[in-house]
Image (cartoon, rainbow, N blue to C red):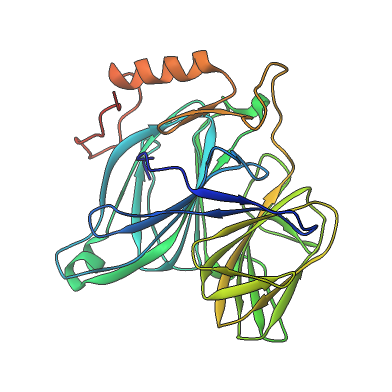
Length: 311
């Protein structure tokens, strides 16, 4: 989706050995759709390659209603859409038209530049539906920022999944616990959906340097501290972390290797971001702004609307 500015989330520094930072977002209602954004924020710009993390919904749409995110551009990143409820029709300037539904993955590599729209499919719009899920952006490594744009869709049954005593995990992208998702990624990372019964626990090993846990539903405890819906808990490196659900819960596990940076990058800012553009170069972002403003990005077939460049 297009990045609409919101207030910076609140961040609480932690002194204990397991939790490095807790990010608590403010809720924003954008046309009946509640959005909770935890990345980026002023204290933590990225966790591994994740530079943008939005939980959307749940929102209930009556028959005839839905979302209509008009065509907008991206560079220097990959977008990943993962739904809990509902459906979204993705269309892009590559000519791709693909509906995503719960448990599936839409991964769009923007690279040197792509344009896409996201709308409620006709079937769901006619019937009415509930929409909820996660929109995330993955910053590409510097040497891949200008890669050829691409798109891939993966069915839920094609993603690795495993369960244990009261928990179930689906690996969305990257590598985790010796398993690897089929989604093409560009740097070491992991992204997983874990559902836990009340009282159940799951342990996150220190195989990736940067890790975070986002509470999508319910509530959890880590090292004796309780965390609620919408919070993203950034973990310290180097040790096993046990997550226990105090209620029936759903958490997103995410992270990976730290982003590469240029020598003069400011601390805590591995990438420059403006609107939907991500790059290690300010000049490249200025070029993308000018290209969009002057109609030099490719069009989405069949679409005539667009989101103007924010001034």
